[in-house]
Amino acid sequence: MTGHIDPNSPLIPAQEMVLPTLQGDGKRRWINPALSTGKYWKRRRLLAYGLIAFFVTLPHLRYAGKPLVLLDIVSREFTFFGHTFYPTDSGLLLLLMLTVFFSIMFLTAVGGRLWCGWGCPQTVYLEFLFRPIDRLFSGTIGKGGKPRGTLNAALRVGRFVVYLACCMFLAHTFLSYFVGTDRLAQWMRLSPWQHPSAFGVMAGATIGLMYNFMFFREQLCMVACPYGRFQSVMLDRKSLIVTYDIHRGEPRHKGKATGPSAGDCIDCGHCTAVCPTGIDIRNGLQMECIHCTQCIDACDAIMHRIDKPAGLIRYSSQDALEGKKHSWVRPRTLIYPLLVLVTSTLFLALLTTKFAFDARVLSSPGAPYAINSARMLQNNFRVRLRNRTDKTETYAIRMLGPASASVQWSDEAPTLKPNESKLVPIMITAPVGMTAANHGKIEAEVQITDQTGNERKISVMLLGPG
Ligand code: SF4
Ligand code: SF4
Image (cartoon, rainbow, N blue to C red; front, side):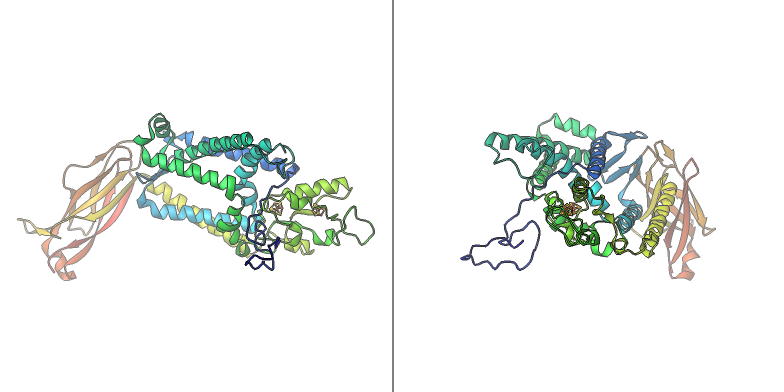
């Protein structure tokens, strides 16, 4: 794919293919894939419309009176399935992210780029929303491929308007994940000047989506997405991939194959014509292949036409193609699920114990300690309390140790409304001599409980003369 370069051009032609979407002179090679409506395409279409419906509906759903998903960055509150996470839950969020990360590694080790071909929003929206729009305006419905002639101005404008409407709708849906559907509906009835930041996010997202789906397209998978680049370390020779059976297909023959030594590939080029990244699967496993299965559908249709069994291009593994025994059990398919199990168990365990209230001790400003008129040592702290339940709670505090110390709320026992957070002062009193033997400090432990019986144990450092 070195392309033609003007002999007078100062450019040096590339000696080999750099990217299937680049010509030798560096210009973009536009891909207009044909469409093959085989069994995999039908399944992918079903899943794609399900995923689009899921993405659009999710921000409207409620659970336990809260949005099912709300990523409120401004208030720094992240709600998933009725649980609200705060910045203090970074440990929980880390466990959640590790669970997702190891799950992706596991899925890739077993199923190759299943995500890219079947679930990634880039593939889903490009192949099942924006390309059908292209086909509608270019008059190649059901076939795909190159447009029939150049689009006239009216069709171009029409296509642009439909793209814009879709991108604006997606951008509004995207924004609703961060601000909630109620606030979004309110803003949509107001002037943009009354909510300029949110309007800016929506406008930026619309422009980004327009650029991506009108112009950038498959380049995102090839040059921007890190997942494709990591394939070589995440796949092994037993991972499921979309692959061409070289033993069955070669030597390829133009036209229907004849003779016992002829391979099944008739070099019709259909597998390349349908490829949305412009590669030839017969050249082996390539980073650009997003495993969209279009070449499987295209080749199966050809095999059917020439009375050969389907599956010249199919889901298989490198080892299986070489006749080696396939095995699902191997180190990475054991280690990754084990890691998923550990991180998800830890996450769930923390989630169930943590979700009553948060309590974090902060030191109070001013002198580190005081000695009162009764010659008792006094240390003041503040407790950051957050009620994470949906009912009003009152909290109690008691000293766990040392035995001679005592603790009390500085004012009356705090009462917090649902999801309310408060900074509550506490005072710990202890005999003056207690810290003397320990260089002026000693560790103490207090316990905070709510009315339901949930408890938090907190360690604090008492300071005094030493
Ligand atoms: S579609 Fe099948 S038969 Fe046609 S070129 Fe590709 S592999 Fe060969
Ligand atoms: S080679 Fe086949 S599976 Fe890979 S991107 Fe192209 S059409 Fe899709």
